[in-house]
View 1 (cartoon, rainbow, N blue to C red):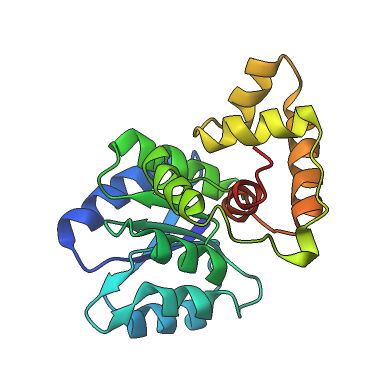
View 2 (view 1 turned 135 degrees about the vertical axis):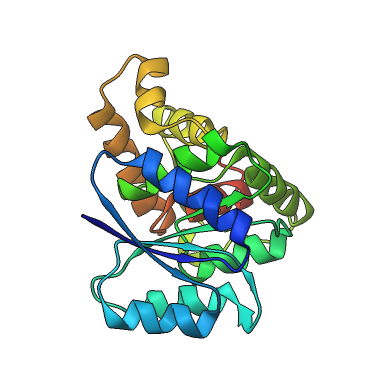
Length: 215
């Protein structure tokens, strides 16, 4: 059974996410719900969690606090932000704190379902809406020097292709079909990208690659 904590204070949004969860996995899904950051922390401490779906604007604070707490747990849950907030700085903060993916509540239901499906598989997903906002931020910061630790990263053409398609919202399996390669080869490219950029998820990889003008 896949163990999920849903942090969302809006009843309608909770119904939408419950439906998406039921459609995302062939396995039974145990969903525990919290409407506040404090309640979410209590649920995370009470039992292991595989996936945390987190809104960011809660009655008692920011979902960032819940994400930060989730990163201290062992085993550590995958975190997917589902929020109406699309401010670039907030997106970056959520990713830097530990979110593996970020989708907007304004995205189509099937897009949210796809993101949850990817998160259940341990992958990372940024919806095209959020990716566009991230790219806007990176363009504004185009003159900011890249960090020294990742300044010598060099991606192969194959790795650049995978990263560009991922930035457009394609799944790894679809990227494999587009490039005529096996999904395992895509995963190998992704692993090398993470190593070269010194990141741990797709969101961070896209951010670093754009800052360094690698894609």
